[in-house]
Length: 107
Image 1: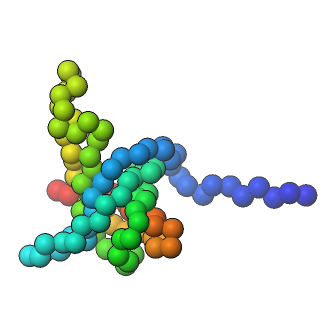
Image 2 (image 1 turned 135 degrees about the horizontal axis):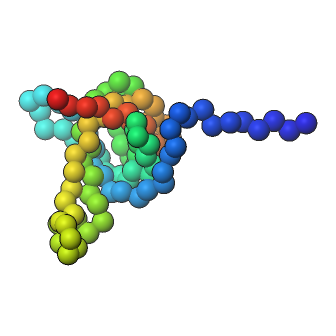
């Protein structure tokens, strides 16, 4: 009999391809930015794919700058501009170049 493993996620993932720059949040210092792409998102977090990023400890607070397609161009209805996300690292796989973050809300 074949066993089928079930996805344990509570929220549905959406596949995306969104260019990003990301770095550890550091008070009073300029961070070293890495570049990559958000590959999937949920209402609670995202997975970033990147080559050559530094190891980030689980719990590290991250600044993520997202660059929608055609950033800075007027598409007739609205201006596509970069936006910022703050998140906490919940897992990483440096060998595969993957990083999971949970969104944080800033008041």
